[in-house]
Amino acid sequence: MSPLNLLFATMPVPGHVAPLLPIARALTERGHHVRWCTGRVFEDRIAATGARFVAMDPSIDHRGRNVDELFPERTRLKGVAKLRYDIRAVFLDPIPTQLDDLRRAANEPVDLVLHDTAYVGAVVLEQLGGPRAVSVGVTPMMLPAPDVPPFGPGLRYRTGPLARLGYAAVRALLDNVVFKPAFEHRDRILAGLGLPAGERGLASVSPHLHLQNGVAGLEHPRSFLPEQVKFVGALVDPAPSVDLPDWWERAMASGRPIVHVTQGTVADTDLTRLVLPTIRALAGEPVTVVASVGAHDVGSLPPNAFAAPFLPYDQLLPRVSAMVTNGGFGGVQLALAEGVPLVVAGTTEDKPEVASRVERSGAGLNLRTSSPSEKAIRTAVGAVLRGPFRDRAGVLAGEYRRHDAAELSADHVERLARSGAVVTG
Image (cartoon, rainbow, N blue to C red; front, side, top):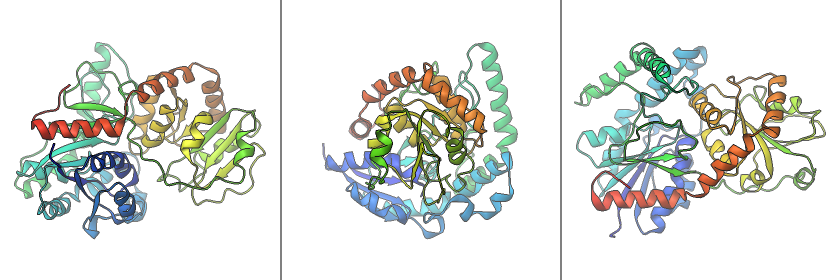
């Protein structure tokens, strides 16, 4: 087919950019023209895919800062108030500026716009007569359905009529009370752009094609899935190469099960929440602990623990027996693709939903807190090392292996462009 002109648009956040990198690489390798509008800190990684970087407006570019640095007032909020603030300030207020960015980029031909589900400007552009938008799910599936828990609280998956009634009640509470101020704010923004009010709910799923990061086996089962929704496998991009730490061979040759602990690349500002408690909890256990600690100095470590700022997951995860994580979706994808069972302890952003899916899948345990006790960590790690969790994680790994996420995503994009209709099959 003739080369396509594709515009990518993503929130300037690692977890929203990284899943689209392999898609961009696959499409440019097929001869398509890809431009990508996002934050400047990602310019080199985007250029490495063969795509052309387009800088977003500086007023909405996070420039590598975390959310607390960008919006210090949110640090005084908790619970629902903080969540409502984030929806408004982080995801809704940028919509008009995103729209301006996309309109400028559309001065060159654009066949399709590929966007992460939080980048609402791409949806608005299509509603105003612009190019069709293709959404990429960078979180667990947000699309509502009567037989799955409403997205957000990380509810346990249940089946049967009573579960459906409970889900409906919680969904009504979320839509009509908890998130109502955020939806009203969004509707005011849309009205200012000449558009009608949007639907209730947090989902931003394209009616043409939605590429969902992950596999169906990790998701909550549902009786109906729209035909444009495609599970494509693990949309993860190889991390930049790092030198092996000097302790690597010693740790790998310990002869004990290796337990990896991480708080991800964004939520690692306070290692006392998970990393350090895990190291202490397992200090007397017959395991080897390998921790990612970012820029932090963790001081002296027990004899069975090792730490480095960053670790090469392609070499580490095939040797890991269990992983303790705050529930970052990308890291969970990587671990399960290698059949590594999980202990998940995260309560911010989409992490309760990630933890809920790991729990339902049987591939790990959900501690339902972001600051677990040492006893809870020790008990959970012992359980996933001994129980059936590895078997279930192995089944999921087989499902991941059946999906070449980058090539499959590129196939779907080409099919949509060629047919002009909803992607089926």
